[in-house]
Length: 97
Length: 481
Image (cartoon, rainbow over all chains, first blue to last red):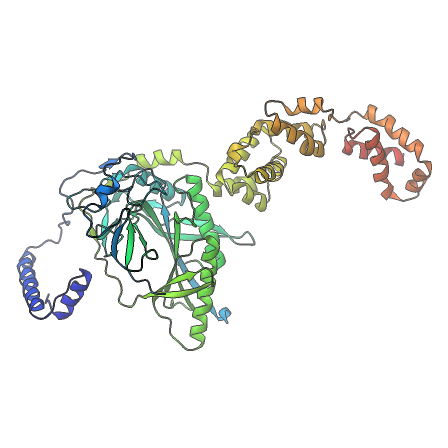
């Protein structure tokens, strides 16, 4: 798999990042290097191997439907870059109409 | 023009579950609290926090699946659906992708003529709600309230087997009835605890190739689901007639104008980069668990409808009214345990009891009379001890004020026991006949309409206590002898 400008643009959009000129060339190189490194895994035959998703064999780790108040409103809002007394504030998400 | 085309409609319904705590964390789901108070470090998406699944969500999903005759998935994994939006703190929604908890199954709808049709389900899966974005309170900022972030949802996806707005209306009505019977969701579309998106396309009649589909959102009542679909079918047909193409897009319903408008194009298909959620261990649904949940299911509206029409021989209209809400159906069920005159029982529930509840804006759970009491009132009528009108107009209102008394006591105290003894009615009939000799002649000469006059006179003499049915019969016998 080759990382080209089109793929960089797509990934940049999906991750809400911007890469221009030099930065774009650099990230392209980086990603290509990472891919070729990971491609080494293709040397192994994994035909009958299930992907490993879970680190333990535990199943049905469930909790009862009980309410626990663990933090206050003030604590919830504390680390926000922008807030008021009740809400998180973010740049206006424009709704077309 | 729309006759040339047929519509292909699939519905996605989001069912907000009425659990006390959220899907993957213990913060409250209570509606109407101050913004950003029903939150925890997990629902806020703080780094290093781990979700833990709520038992009740799985129970609700299995209940709904069993009620819809779905296949229940044994091995349930969770997945991350990745997208950026300010009201999604983690940057992904925890949902299910490859292993939805229910697959297959169906919802039965009835069209206007009472004909049944099955709308099959593709899947039902478990996921979580996002927070709420408020765009109209500040000119520069969007305000974010995360109280709803992480509230559990079931998403129910139908096959594209719905053909019209009317069928969609029936389908959503049935789903709402079902989640209310199961008590897993309050089914309130106006408040958003049940939300419906429609995928709509049209194609020339008889075609096998589906047209381009348009997704319509923001229909906040069942009636609006129907209106939006009907408008959209018309809009698409007009476009095709003009030789234009349908754009693949997401549209929103404008309830005031009754139209839809474009929200966003779907041409560059969304890339959600689903992958397995490694922070939640899989959930195994065993046969034993399914059996346990099955034993907890209440009687379902479909089964009750069938019982009422087939076993109780009630009309489908009556059965429909009686099964509309679970509480009414359960009251009727209890009543039928004490009364085998099902038609009379149905009439009392749908007539006197329902109008009393409507008048007082009461819920059946607050109705003062036990089904057993209504059953004994019906029995009084059947035994001929009181007339139907006395039961309905006199005894019933007094009973409601005196729920501890029996209908018989009230009938006796108020002198409402009717004469159903021929020996006491006959002398009154003799009296009436003697009073109107010329009318008797006229009756015997063929003026049969005069029967009512005689019966009325006897009723008057008895002060309304003569059994009208018996009086009728005795008067006729007497006149024709």
